[in-house]
Length: 342
Image (cartoon, rainbow, N blue to C red):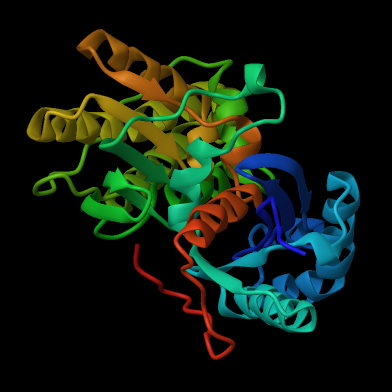
């Protein structure tokens, strides 16, 4: 029987979230994520524990996504999965499941770059077209910001990506997490720092790094915050607790200002006025506010829905959908790549 619909199962397991999503003809039917609370006591992701939790979660999560989408496994056109970048053990769980499941169903597999997925999350359509967000027009610039990546990417079409600026050391998301640890905030630190920042004022100044071109650097900022805290706590041992909201607001403003400064330079250099953000840090309230301010420069701005900012399988499924239309399939010999380039 000839298939009239393209139904993609997406699987995401690059870090500590096990996720599965179902997309039919570009529209999202289900997006299920299982978080791993096991890492909270360690203050960060423990790779070995993450891969074990993925093994426990992968079957129930896929089952839940298919059930929510009201789709049987026999109706699937292909299975898309994150093949990198990410934690190798975590990637292995998702890729191994995808390959075995697809082989059993005799359908193609599609490997997806995690960061490409974050960018193409902007093209996910809701069943209710009214709630679907606007899609960027090609070409557009995308600031992709996560715990492992900080890049400015020029996107010409669904498959043509050019990184025109990136971090030379630490990612912005990592800076948020490391500063959160210094402030003794619970894990995950980034969202909690953001919450505290909304109740404070950015009264403390931290230096901006001097980096060539459109590149970023955040290692110096972390060191600056560390010495600042040591100096102030030496004068008042309760300084951190008494000024936590203002410290958070100051650090957050510094990181976002560094990001926006380079993004503005990229807009001027390329002349592209279509501007999007993507990645886990795109959920940050200050960054979302500053991106909207670019409209004063005549830019059209695009911000993904919160559920498509952090790691999710909907972004993998939508990327898989566009690759399926191009018949861009992987072989069973494909292996995960922890450092896959965009």
